[in-house]
Image 1 (tube, rainbow, N blue to C red):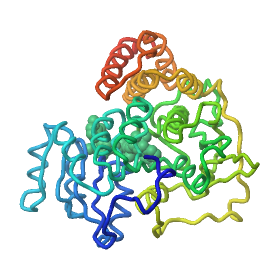
Image 2: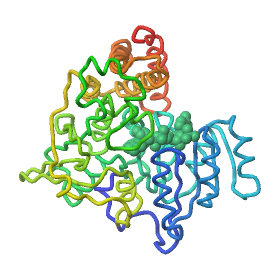
Image 3: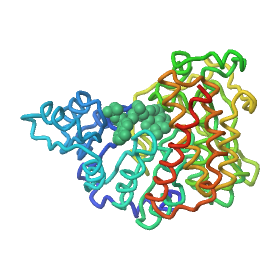
Image 4: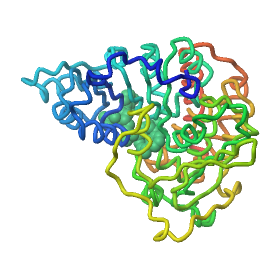
Length: 405
Ligand code: NDP
């Protein structure tokens, strides 16, 4: 259930005096680390149940020990022995492999951070949703690929779904206390990424070193590349559509290079409500962790006098076609989101491996959407359906890759 519809009195944790039991899926990533940074500042308030990672076994073990986790899980079965060795004598339970990851997500907890990158997070996040407690959602690919399936599971289990993406957290904060039908439109801001002022010719030559230099945010590699292509903002439009049940015509994007204003919500009475904070993911994560209250976060405060001005501009659809592709997908619905996401994951991985040029990312996504016209009209009714479409779209994108390289 989306928190705007949920009264604080109905939050699932019945005894506010006992520590909040939390799990972090994707603990070793950028969002996972920021979450655990907050948790570590108030250890008596939290009991860490499960931490999961993929192949970064050393960091997963370190975090599990530091936060006294009950369980540490690697998604990769091949990492089991290394993780067992790293945690020998600590008393922390160890497991590895896809089923162990699902079991970790299902381990009873009051609040679960879903911060695995990519559609790999869909099944574990759905397991977390089925607990019917609170899920903090960073993994936007879940909603892009299988938003319909995902949101119906959220509703079925009465889960409190708390957005972590800074723009969606900002929208929730701005809309709290307002009836959804009084919201005229929601505008997500985008920093514009490292190529905001580059020409198309310069972008064509850009490699991972340039694309990974985000001007404002420190994030994992995949979302950083998505920010550079503006695909990230397209994925976020689809995410907002599912989270807030808003039609495409009520969603928009504005480039705001300072990344201080995260979202602007236009109300029917002419008022615009915005949320402002310095670009630090600990602020939206803290909002989801403490919801419906607030917690103290010792991060930088905005100094508007020092900033001088906040600027806004329309995104350029010519140089950033990924945004247009995502908007088209949002309007067409069906399985188009699963195809878009799969092709983008293939394209970003290929770009990071230097098998694809920067402009080839949107090119490959567009070609794959055309190639998958027979799939995009399908209406998946389960995660398995979504993952089948994802797999087929990946196969076709891989087959087209050499053409764009
Ligand atoms: P990172 O790449 O930093 O971390 C990803 C996490 O997922 C790591 O713990 C990684 O483990 C784990 N992982 C990777 N592959 C798999 C797999 N196949 N199965 C299970 N676990 C896996 O990503 P971010 O933290 O940057 O992003 C996570 C999600 O949050 C993304 O969906 C992103 O779009 C979203 N998001 C991120 C923001 C940010 O500021 N970073 C902002 C808003 C949203 P290991 O370390 O072992 O590889």
